[in-house]
Image: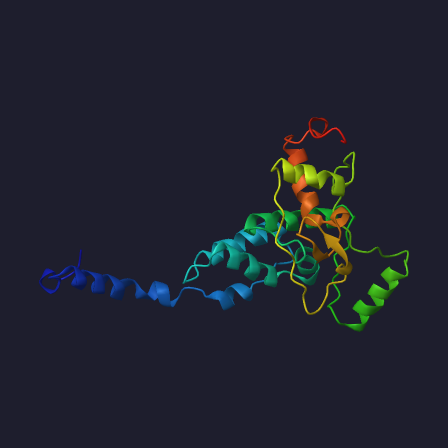
Length: 227
């Protein structure tokens, strides 16, 4: 409303005036380095942190695509969440949040131990050795409890694939530094034969099956006769 009409003769004049007025919004917008510098607060749940992080990500210029957003968010997580999620290969940001919330629930219920000792420290190494030896005060990482199914996951997977209820995931890339749960002597059919774990210990497959059970869309009696 305060523009001098005599100075606005063409649409390009109007465009330049608009950019000059609001350029500061672009100059002050956060970038990807600001996203990677974020961390979860002590009093913040995984869901709350994910929402805060994503809201901040929407302000980044240029826009962050979903695939890149998932990778950036993963890098901001603590060692505990990173090691447990990196082998799952979440398809999108929402699935990563669901995995994180299940892990958080496992910690809250005492089924998982959230390691607070920094990786690589002498205390961390002593703690890992004690877990291997079966020290009574510690237990190794394990996936949150899922509902029991009346068959092995290796027997269930072919049926789910044949009925197009689930789809296989891309093979996992082997990191330079293997997480503690990574097994090169095991292969996962759900991840297209990738080395990491077997189907019975596939965290991603168990999450998919649990979703189907929770949604009551997979009554086992309606699958194949072997079930």
